[in-house]
Length: 233
Image (cartoon, rainbow, N blue to C red; front, side):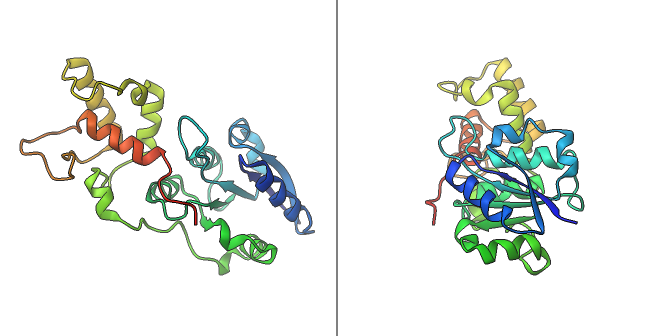
């Protein structure tokens, strides 16, 4: 029985190229080829998909530069790892934010685009995943994350969903010093979801006991979590 595969990539050339290469294999059936937003419109349709190949990042977007995370989350709400294998491709392989977020989203494999440039390597990764590396790699700079207040218990994807649903990121402009009750409540609600460790701008612990991150820290965290930073290699 052929494996049903979907390709998700905002780059038209990359998406079409992958789709054509996969369609050449008799063991595979290309069931869909989408940009990220189109993939989010699928619901029960994912129930018939064996493999999803998802591009992680698109720095042209105004909101979240890592739309692939939302696609993986969307798939995982319906399909377990045993049901649908998710392979992530990215030119931002060394960006710790996308690594952290894809680990939380439960992607199965995480490849730099250069690793699968040859068709033979692409087919091997899809048809023989047991021979591939396992899981999404850990971040390369845990100290930098700690200086942002990101610890083992932090929920990065949940924090971004909260920010998007409340419009928090857009509201932060020019409000970093706001000490009003409404902003205090919003900070508390945000951290009830995010579980950031409060830190100063230099990453050191506050002198006074502080249960919630400052608005400045929240802004720095969201910028790290939703914007590409490393140069594609």
